[in-house]
Image (cartoon, rainbow, N blue to C red; front, top):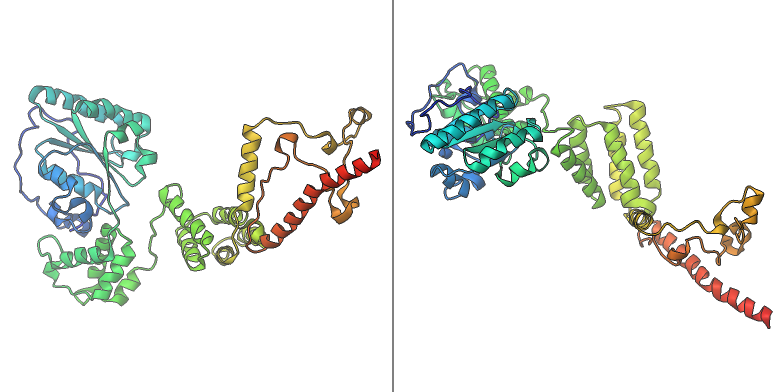
Length: 472
């Protein structure tokens, strides 16, 4: 059986009583509450019940060894909802000889936890017993509050188990993170969830076995796909299907009827937000229109702000296409305007058209590289004054100070360029920031710039030659 539910942990006394750190009886299965949801009744009770997290919990794996030999150290369990972080904590609670206390960061305050830690310190001094403190949704404590755990973790008075759906790199205090081992729980595969569902159908004590239900393979696979890696959702849907079927076989048509609107895993301010926009950006950069429209659809259907997507497309048009296809920026701006004008869902095809255009367009990051190099030069090197010949001279004083002196009006020059006039300050003369590629429109731009730069190189020679002749 897999780890699945992330429901709040069972209520426990916030203060360990003296003497609770000793051995406790093992192997006693808790009574089954027939009125509890199927997902709760089928929650794994032992490590051997768990399906789908073999990389963490298969025999011989370090985490399993630590749990079975009661040598667990502070850990952070990180994974999406429904992957079993709370369930694993309950399994640990049943396996350990240490005193185990569970808290939810949603329901408990730091004051209660400090009281528990003080009691844990005293218990360790009295009897040498450990206290395992499980904090569900630890990311809901701010980093200053998380600091309260550090002294007791460092002293060994408590073993901390933190559970979070958010990336610990961003949400867990770095000092606490450095003293804990992060274990990543993966979303369940379709195969793993089908195993869980079949087990629930056959289990007469905790599951639906007494109802003698049957379910087609494609129906169970449909439930698993709907659940999107979350076994709790899968079991909830199986329970609904069983109630709806009323003793008849559960088929794909019934599952499709129940699964009208699948809730996609997404958090517009969390890591998945950045993962999906990264996937969209990199798929377009790699000229893959199919992947691009898929990741776009994932974001749109999950409720992402369409104007955020549009802004990213506009940025992509300049950063990854640039002058290889100058029309890309026009297309991106048009898509942004269409979304703003029509709203959603009508604007989804404008975004799709734009993403597909970006993926199919020739690529160049030459504009992006040119700006970054110029910005670095502007920020890190001496800011030389603007050359006098490039300055305007709207007043007599400025003219008397040679503002504008020597300026050559390009339109009056042969080929429309004053080849001998330098526009960079002296320290940067001859420097090249923009280096166009051979892709798309930049191929022509590259050839044109090569000719212009060659003309600039020859200009000083011609000017020098004219000067020599005049002196003669």
